[in-house]
Amino acid sequence: MAAKTEWITVVNAEQTFPAYLALPAGPAKGGVVVIQEIFGVNSHIRSVTERTAELGYVALAPDLFWRVKPHIELGYTPEGIEQGRGYRGKLKEDETVQDVGATAKALAARTEMKGKKWGIMGFCWGGLVTYLGAARLKPAAAVAYYGGGIANYLGEAGNISCPVLFHFGEQDKSIPMDQVDKIKETFKSRRDVTVHVYPGAEHGFNCDQRGSYHAASAKQAWGRTVEFLGKQLA
Image (cartoon, rainbow, N blue to C red; front, top):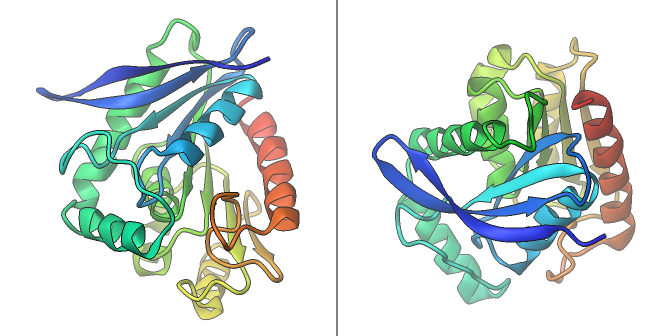
């Protein structure tokens, strides 16, 4: 059954920003904060948020570009990539993670949640933000899809206490395999952290609006994500 959706307002200190909410048709199993790519909370991220709600979770995707301009939506074109990188460059990682924390607080406070667990799932830039959120916000679970730059923050790995699922494309030119290897090495003693690498998949392989969409890898990664969330947010 289709999820019920709406834009809501999240409060962070004395400021507010929009977030896209998708509610499950039945009782919620838990909650998931869905973190955007550098393209904003566009149609793809909204569809992921809705798919997450259809699994039975309260899903909330914060508009993390609001500090530049709210409701920015970009396409997967060279121009969109350039604009998205520019918007991201105007943001501070610490403030972005704070916004995710405010979103998680708003999610946890919803009546549908009733004290249930919440997790984070992000894509591209959102994969990095998910990793940082796992280290700083204490979610019950985290799923990071092709998060660029995670290797630069491995000093925070010791702060992560929740299970984590990483997805990377073997052919991702923006995230070389030596960086993925560093992540594997950092978490090698953690049985609750799994790093999956998908042969033949490039950056953005989960997004069916991108030329790099890799259907087989997207299906396998989503299946693993569904199983992971089902276990960790139960």
